[in-house]
Image 1 (cartoon, rainbow, N blue to C red):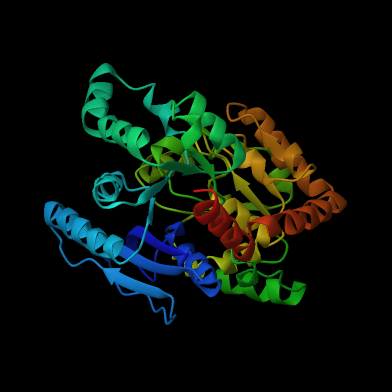
Image 2: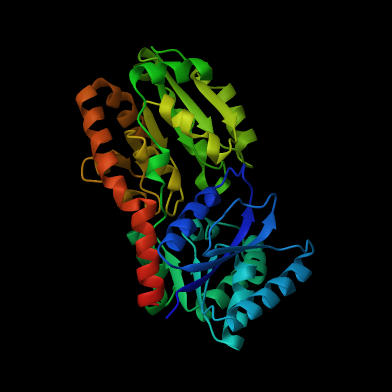
Amino acid sequence: MDKKLIYVLNHYSSKSVQHFYHILNLLIAMADKGVKITLIIEKCDDIPSINHKNIEVICQKQENNLKRGLELFNILKRLIKRGYSRIFIRITINSTIISIVAAKLFGAKTYYWQSGTTFLVDSDKSFFYKLKWLMFSYSKFWFVKKLVDFFVTGPESMIDYYINVVKVNSKKMMLLYNDIDINRFTIPSAKEKGRIRKELGFIDTEKIILMVHRLSPVRKTDMYVPDILENDSLKKYNAQLVIIGDGPELPILKRKIEGSSARDRIHLLGSKPNSEITKYYDAADLFINPSFTEGFPRVVIEAMACGLPIIATDAGGTSDLFGKLQKNYVVDRDNIVEFRKKLSTIFENASLLEKLSSENLNVVKKYSTDSVSDMYIERIFNNG
């Protein structure tokens, strides 16, 4: 049987700041292994440059939401009649609903990817927010979780979350990892690291702490920053916190930082295209991921691929990503004091930093694009 997959992606831009940037590499790896893929992109800022005999790219043309939905339905209908029997949709609910309807009518299976603990945040909202959420958001999600063939998530603990908290049928659950192109990330020499730091405006005597994620209210970044940097130990090491990311929480964060004693050591750089982020990883000494909600944080495995030691909160599936030693640097998401303590002591032990780096470089191999593409092929075509 030919392995044919329809992959629906909601947006593509070569300068994307989102992790959709990585998906093309995964699809190419699957295509290299004989899977025929049609990539449907709902919104194209530009057309991805893919020259592969097993990959067809369809960029939708309609801008109106209703017309674009009908366009997607007709594309799916044509592809299913051409022998495509599996449709994989990442995150977008409306496209998933359309895909489910087309699959039920014309004979295909649907796979919907989602990973995140935002339902915990939604439960804290006001009555009127919840009513609006139930009517316009959860009603769609309920349709999807009931009628999709497979509900896909990762890493491991997110399976339990969706079964026990979100009440997805356990028989529908499928575990798939996010992937990382390990070859894209390297460990620079000391000389190269110094050159990159100089280019970015930092000096060799500074310790660079890097944080990369969207500044969304569900992550509650202002709960951690600037508080975690306000201690004398980090000042002694001249530790600089570099934050890459944008979002609705940015103005709140700016105000908090302006009133902080650590304001001169915190650098808000805004969003950066994913393709340009590698040099910031190369310049860093440590990566942090303080977050109230998470799913499968791809920035964490990016940091691991760069051999960076990491301090993170236990949100979502973050802890699943690490080896035995690195797990000791995952703290309770409500314990700001413990996070600050870990941060203030980690630079005092150079041997520990080397061990964390080595472990992360070894563990991250399981998330390589090559390994994850095998996982996708096996589970979608042999188990699904």
